[in-house]
Length: 501
Image (tube, rainbow, N blue to C red; front, side, top):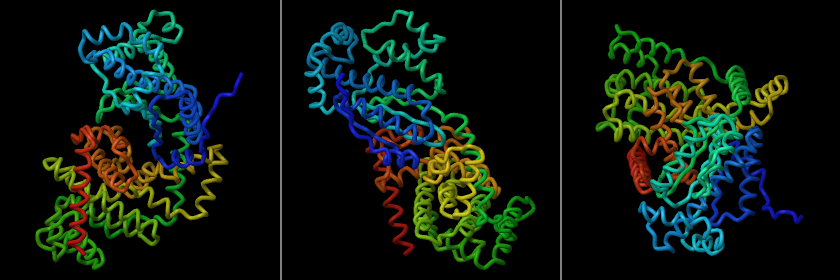
């Protein structure tokens, strides 16, 4: 038997992307067999890099099934156009589906070339965030109501079967050519953690999107927790939070304290007073007239706002910007904070809690990354020793250092420093806002959106990679709306920077 032709896979590039949490995207127009093999090889390498090889057989089957269905959906559009049938008309749809499968198989090459000419594509995206694997298959043929009903029926049927043998014994309608395969796929994925919420199919930005999200193996999640805790315990550069700020926060929490007393206490620390006035006069707050003293600053931001600004100042004082890498991280953080504050003003003006927390949560969202840059070689050697002692794969440290799980570490550090719950939650879930506790979902989504807008403007993220829950929550239904918001925020930021400078 002749050996199958396969494209070369750049395993180092895939590993680097997987560990850094960067989505991998592959696009094809006709999905030839060589591309199917290549997609499977990339997915296998991706999962191996994350220590999730146990998912490979299941997700490769899932990928092939979904990509094939997407290709058939595109072919169907061409077929209906050729037959002068309206795919959204019930009678035409029923008529066309009687002969679609037979005619497609007889003239497959012809229809595939036609769909290439029409620009109909299949796009596959792999990503990993917050101990979850995400697989998306997109095609630019919008799902119609008849297709959605058939797919929904197959998914509902799959949940009634206890195993694959039971499903195989049933008679499945195959007029769509995607009956039994979809049911088997759902049954297979349930074995590795699929829930009703983690399989989604929807239309977005003129694309049909099928999204599958699966949790890492429980063992790997526990390994991340062990290393995160070790890192928190070991970084000697992280002293207790500055006592003067802790004392001011005690005053803020004391119902018998007033603004004048708190302002007087802050004035006793000349450096802190100067930093506070500077921050209140920064681009995000844009006071009509420059704030000249601490009392005016406290009055302007309120006690909750003051508390949050003090957490920001204390964090910056402890972590600093003594390297170029740290400086760039803080530049990004300030921009995210500015965007967060302005998004809150536009979309959440009546939500006092979100308004109070938006700026500081945006500023502190990446402290896990900043902390990684503070880690010395001695600490790394200790962590490696821990992995050997507890038989934890070295990939766990590699993945955390690459940034994929920096949010876990950041949240743990915030807990150690007794930050408010809102800040801890926004740090922990800024890459997965849909998983945040209900009370903080809007705040987490806002920080996630601000962060993704920054990455979009820097060319690091595409519109397709923006969180679906963020787009839905803030009514960003297409890329034009999203780009308009991003450009408006960027313009405001540049103007504010020019005004300050």
